[in-house]
Image 1 (tube, rainbow, N blue to C red):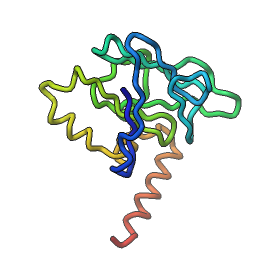
Image 2 (tube, rainbow, N blue to C red):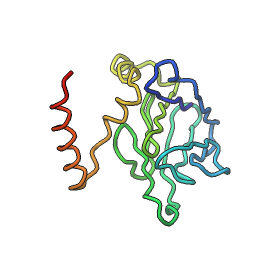
Image 3 (tube, rainbow, N blue to C red):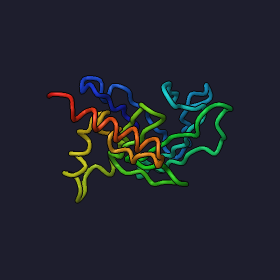
Length: 157
C-alpha cells in the first residue's frame, strides 16, 4: 500500500491507498485514476503502479504528454526521477509533483538485513523527503540555491 508522508507526525499515515494484487493502479488528478491526488505540479495521469502478488511493487511514469502550458510530469523515487519500469522497495519514497510524498509499504519485505537502515528512513517527514530530491540541473536553480543559502546564513537562530 501507499501511505502519505506529512510534516506533521500526527497526519503521517492517515491516508492509505491499497494496491490490489496483480492489477494496475493509475495515479493522477483525472477522475479515471484509482488514486486521485490534488496539488502543485500534478498532472491528469502521472503513473501506473502494480503490486505483483504482494511480493514486490513496480511503478512507471505514464507516457501521456502534459496538457498545453503544463510542465512535464515530475515523479521521483527516493529523490531521483523515474526512468522506465522501476522496482520499488519497502519504505521507499515517491514524490508526485511538488508536494505530495507517499511511502511504499510492502509487508512481505519488512524483515531483512537492512531493516534498521530502512526504519531510520521511515522516520523521514515531508520536509526531509523533499530535501533529498536531487537538484534540478539548471543555472537558475543553482543561482537560487546560492542566494537562499546566503540569505539563510544571515538569519540569526
